[in-house]
Length: 196
Image (cartoon, rainbow, N blue to C red; front, side, top):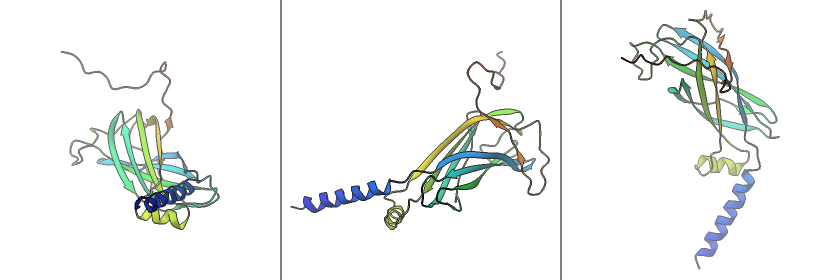
């Protein structure tokens, strides 16, 4: 006797949730990579991530979680507010900073032994939480029932140049990136330790 209303409620909830999924998730890409700040103790790399909305309604952005690996080692994890909404059939740029501590004197457990130079393998992983339109979507988001997330990963080679870049106030220095080479191309690797 008590199952009828429960099944009816679940069927209604499923139908409503299906209606919430008629929207396309935002498409993410990296538009630019630059050194925003640099000192002997570390550097801040600014990844400009572009979120593109293919829907005819705006998508409010709520949270971006991201991580950077250099040469297959996790060097940074962060969370921040994307501070914006992707307008209908439009785009929104988010700058996500990655702070890299440098040197043995650093308190950071993931500090790099020295400033990177030349090309290094990188992998940027981004998880962006957003809200689909509608009052029901807002309620489901606020109650934790439905929190849509789009994931994006980019891998390639990041060129740090041959030393510290001359950075003026508010003038980031762009770091060139390129895709990972095919297996038959050479890839910079760390030298193997000498065997005794």
